[in-house]
Image (cartoon, rainbow, N blue to C red):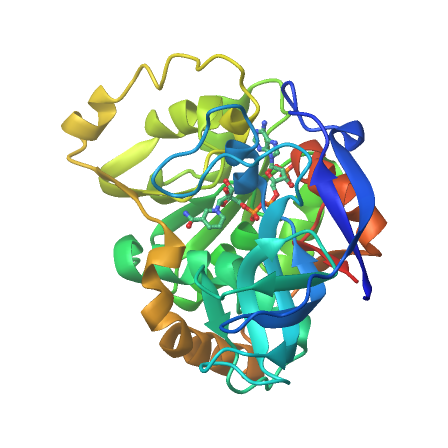
Length: 335
Ligand SMILES: NC(=O)c1ccc[n+]([C@@H]2O[C@H](COP(=O)([O-])OP(=O)(O)OC[C@H]3O[C@@H](n4cnc5c(N)ncnc54)[C@H](OP(=O)(O)O)[C@@H]3O)[C@@H](O)[C@H]2O)c1
């Protein structure tokens, strides 16, 4: 029996997740049953959205609440070591929703996206060619309707989704503005990700900083954070603006929901649209989207940044980093 190190949910985060909410354990890999695969996980993706399913009773129609003392659910990239399942064979590369563990034994009934041809480093299939990069792609191409010269504002612009969303908006001819925290990250938005301007979300007067960076108003807002930033944006949208609701990092740690934006009437007067989307519902379009994104990478239109940690023991820390705004690019743990 081979050892399987995993990180379990030791306690439920109260507010922001902390390293002590996670515990490293060692378990035995169970023998493979008919219909199962054994997958060796090579990378773990850290996604702020999974915070939503760490609370007691938080399960919904997207995912069940995570049980205590079991490996934390998350997105992984791995290689099939052994298969007793008709659809998979040893050597297959899978992006999947497994868990923070070195090996996964599963009947493969859950969210799995096989990587049939890996032309890029495998870690790309969790980032720019994975769920986060594809969120930027589907959000903007399906719902953004960006036209040249429009102003596209992106929050969490240095993160996994935002770093790619800004570059895709640029490909559509937009003037791009990114929101991040601190002078250094804002500087890097412009110099390394090609944003035309940046807004520091820690500025004393956020509305003023946003107005300075978006003098023509906001046509498209790619929203990764929700909360007070969304409210500030609503006051500066143009007529027919499109607000793409990708995520809400600013609210995931709230123990009590706060009142929502108090200025939704802006949508009425500006005849604007708000559109939410869930990327994994497009699983049957991942190959098509990856082909377009891969072309953009090879043509030099998309640069890829990563916040990478080594070793399964650092997975909890990597997850906490997301809420502290430490990352620049996709946060990933290499096993
Ligand atoms: N709809 C979907 O299917 C889908 C799929 C994947 C991800 N998502 C969502 O997309 C969003 C971005 O995910 P990601 O993986 O790209 O994360 P990320 O941007 O790599 O990391 C999170 C970033 O959010 C910012 N942040 C943290 N706390 C904040 C707060 N209180 N207020 C404002 N900003 C805060 C920080 O950036 P700065 O400090 O630089 O501002 C942090 O680096 C998340 O909401 C996630 O749930 C949605």
